[in-house]
Length: 337
Image 1 (spheres, helix red, strand yellow):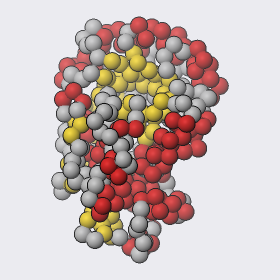
Image 2 (cartoon, helix red, strand yellow; image 1 turned 135 degrees about the horizontal axis):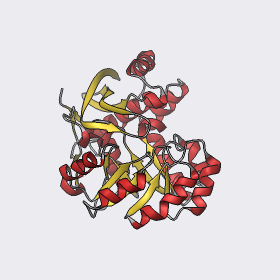
Image 3 (cartoon, helix red, strand yellow; image 1 turned 90 degrees about the horizontal axis):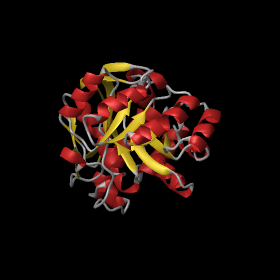
Image 4 (cartoon, one colour; image 1 turned 30 degrees about the vertical axis):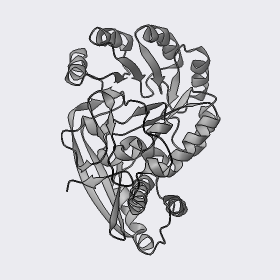
């Protein structure tokens, strides 16, 4: 396989702020894998929380470029196992794994959801994320993009008051993501107030390693609680089953579609709800997530919707959340430049 790497800097429509950071731009790495006249594309963004940079990913991937050039590509799963053996980071593996899946589907002439024999007649609608800002700014963002489900980023001293204020302007379902900013006491206290305000669930209210606190929340919260920072890779799923109602799988964190498919299966066996989430990423990554839609309870795949300009074409999310799947095989990705 022939490898290509290209860095992009994605420009956001609005400052994206969560409890621990804020940014107006997002660096991302797009990987291309070419074979027999077809090219598959994958993506992984930088992330300071997980200490991932463009430079670190490029160094990891170029270190195995020679191996990829002579690799006998049969399935994405075989390539993923090889990459694991080379001890690459999950972010670098994700970019390669998504490219491998896109390539595989293009070689087969089928979208991934058809290869997996799933039905796209029914699928969950993505939420649209409202980052932390002043209440006026958050309301303005909702009015700019009317949507049936909003994920609201919180993590302040006035979180319930924020939701009360936002609720005056929409009947949409709310999902709350505190990004590890609350204590167990706060989560348990806030839950009934938020439920009365039309909140569907809480996402990662406590620090990722506060398992004792999450056990309290799990048993006392009137709202379901979904793991994000506490569920990074496959080995975390079973532990999360004792402390959460469901898991949010991020392809970049777990290492791509290959482990995500196994995580979905494991979560189902444990009775967990399943969500897949995105980073601030382009249509390259979002199109891969979309292939999983029929297997999910919830999805957060609005990353490309938050950008001023996209870098690729693939899955299209229309007004109200309807997804238009490309006929092109794999994830259906083509690059704009």
